[in-house]
Image (cartoon, rainbow, N blue to C red; front, side, top):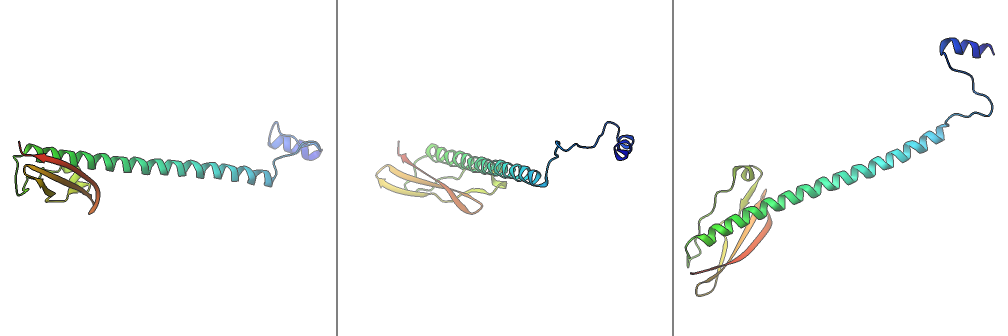
Length: 138
């Protein structure tokens, strides 16, 4: 009992455990840490996957915007039998991120006054999007 009084003087409000009281064992603590670790890994994996999906989506949106802009520019140009059309300026923010258009585009004369135009958008030297449309001599 002397230890109990001494303990109470050092840490007021503390007392010795009785036989029917048990503390947390090392095994219980390790199981709790393992469960917490698994939950953290699953959460971080989901976070990484969603982050990757956002990056892929942003890349796709930027490429589509660039391809559609170039296609509209070609459609607004006057009809060229040789398929020589002007290239639009790539916005600086996209150019700095490594986006470019494979130039000149693939232009196929299908019939008199009808061309198939294929635009390929590149990102860091890799083709990521291909847009096909038709140009008509009007």
